[in-house]
Image (tube, rainbow, N blue to C red; front, side, top):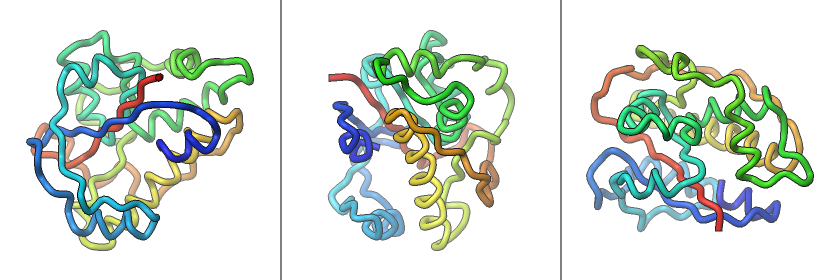
Length: 192
């Protein structure tokens, strides 16, 4: 996401954090899937999500609806800037791309049109990017492909273009829907 936005001239600071404890090395299967896309993650260590990261961000992108529920449950005022990646891509298509004179902040606010807390009640997984740990070795490549496509939809929208969200095999499937351990990574964007 950082590279895609930079390529279209959007300056942003990014952080990555999750619900696991800080200091854990990234899974070798994730490293391999990222390396195949030119991203070197061999030195990446986990960072546990903290309130100041979430509260200081203009956009928080999570992989699963459960992650959204956990972050918003801590502070309901966060809802307007916390999206699942699939939900964000769907909103880009539903609301439309960023206008030529529209700031990223204004566009992100506009992307909230029609979203309600009700969409995330229960154990819905329809807006999830599935956790690759549930699919074995090939799952890491499949999920990396899915993330790349969904990020591409968002970046295209930020560039004023519409790219439809494709139906993905396995989309939203395989997630537990509970509050168990999750390796999903959150992406935080804040304007410079």
